[in-house]
Image 1 (tube, rainbow, N blue to C red):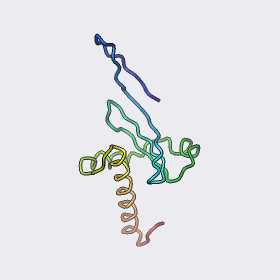
Image 2 (spheres, rainbow, N blue to C red):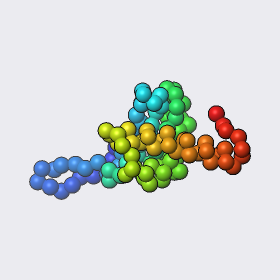
Image 3 (cartoon, rainbow, N blue to C red):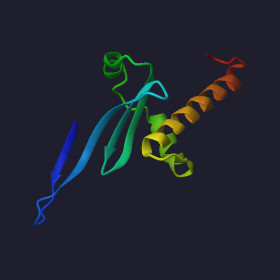
Image 4 (cartoon, helix red, strand yellow):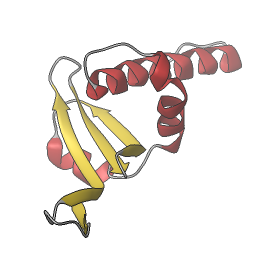
Length: 110
């Protein structure tokens, strides 16, 4: 879904006001959903694996925890593209959650 806002200029150019993209990341074996508003990321979610229908059905919501994490660390991440940085944040967030769970319970989850 892309919502356009008409800007009153002599060229009648358009600015993307809000967008939602679902991207397949082959190297990381996952789908990533990126929602932007005024070119800023306001929502992220992901799913490991390549079942697109399952992803669009069950992962169409914003992972607020991941989104807040990404927006906090994005300036510290490398990578050639925004998607590279998003994937780095996903891996770091996943690792953080596993370590948190391990400290809390004494068990490592798979």
